[in-house]
Image 1 (cartoon, helix red, strand yellow):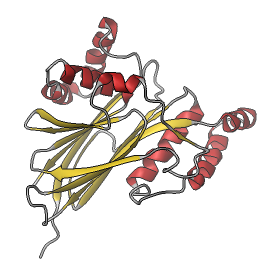
Image 2: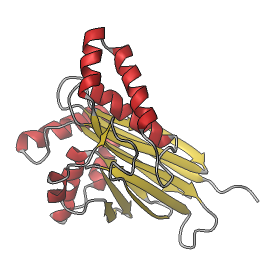
Image 3: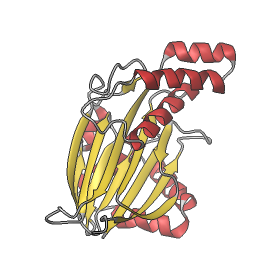
Length: 252
């Protein structure tokens, strides 16, 4: 019997708060389409505006999509060592030492999709892990079925969790885990805090923003998204923050 596969289409919208450097990191980038038995994606947000913070977010995203956090626990000390080496490589000697001494923190959301012939009411399953204020939105037929780990915009303002380069393990960083079914047409949206708060406010007000956001993808990728985001930032409904939104659409 042939191994079951998912038809996966992913697309990422990302915009720095200002300039060209963002502390948000994501994988994959751009538009991807593939048939695969499993698929992983992740977003992370470095909490301090520095090279060191962005490098740490990148380390976490790469580890997540490799499956390093899929077990019950994961020792993070090796990632911290990799971060220190990368910071030293990317910066001048004195600045690299200063950045390494200050450390770095980041939030993370990672998901893995798996096809399964055993799924009773669908085509597979997803698992997710999160630390901090990134948020997952599960949408079916244009309607939000679930947001996780947050369900209200005010919850994001009180979240203080993050992964430090000094963390001994993901368990010590207060990692949360969840899972759920995949059905043909399910869309999973991964958002860092700025976009997550906006989406939760939309849902709280009784609106469903998913079709509008997909239309931005079709009409011009990053250029349309930037215009859309800046207008909402000027009106005060969208945070002046790095923005990342990664959509994964799953078909049978």
